[in-house]
Image 1 (spheres, rainbow, N blue to C red):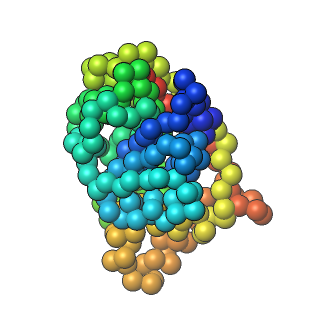
Image 2 (cartoon, helix red, strand yellow):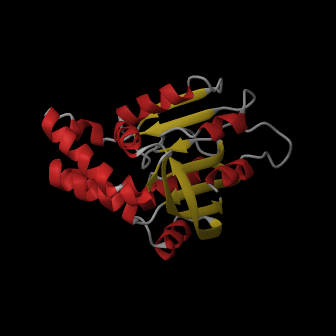
Length: 241
């Protein structure tokens, strides 16, 4: 669903190449670079240098013109009226001043430019990770997992957009069945793409093995011979400047 919406948002409205398609709180979305192609450019922003490193590694094969900025979304170091599209996919919940970030996104958009923000509500699948992190890593581990799903009220999201001055605000919810690798593999893929990597580096081998065992056991209801499947809720907000 996100991929389809990304493709729709990044289709140039006048047959012109997109000048810039920025990704705020960038974990890098390959579809962004693919749709922009070599005629346009992409800017990736994240306050976390580790996430930028992950994004750079994922983007290396895309061939797109990507500029990277280690900065907060509340103060985007780019000129006004310079972006066709702004994405913030599964990242808005981590931004301290969401209103300021949305005002910055609106500032850098061209008139009529479009924004897409996606978040996700809590779910039993990641409750397993929350409980295991709290048990084996401590309060900070569980708190991070809960933060991932903390911006989950569509009415609040709509109000944030309207207060920032956006028009044509639309917020919708959806659910998608996701197919994932086996539990052990997916756990470490997820950890290594998040700040949890730093927290888990403090564990010894026995603690790490106990954490892994708890998560793999907790994910048994979603597991089969080939991997895992679970249904993920999504909240997707779109708007125009």
